[in-house]
Image (cartoon, rainbow, N blue to C red; front, side, top):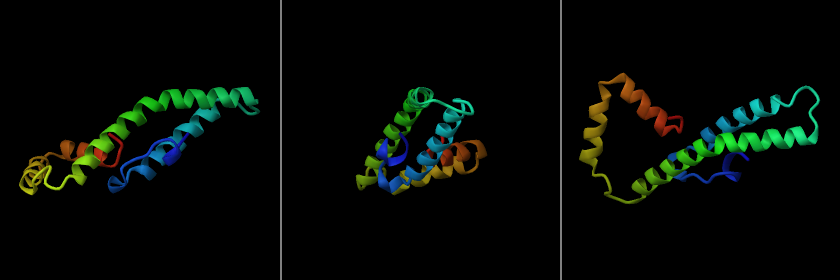
Length: 108
């Protein structure tokens, strides 16, 4: 349901733990909705709801992760001058820089 048991992320990007922690938090919130003394059916339904709600977001992050991972694996896919130009273009814009950092960490 969470972490690498649910999604395999490209190892070079280091998002596995970030996504795992995000899912743990969301799963805990989903299970809290069961009430003080949940029955097995309530727990199962909460787990299904969690998976249904988080799956699209996690899949989108996973797809972007793999896309970026393939670029990292392909030597020369983005020449160093192009990377430098991109980073320079966002360096002076705190909002773009923050969004880029969040994307790299898997939270975009």
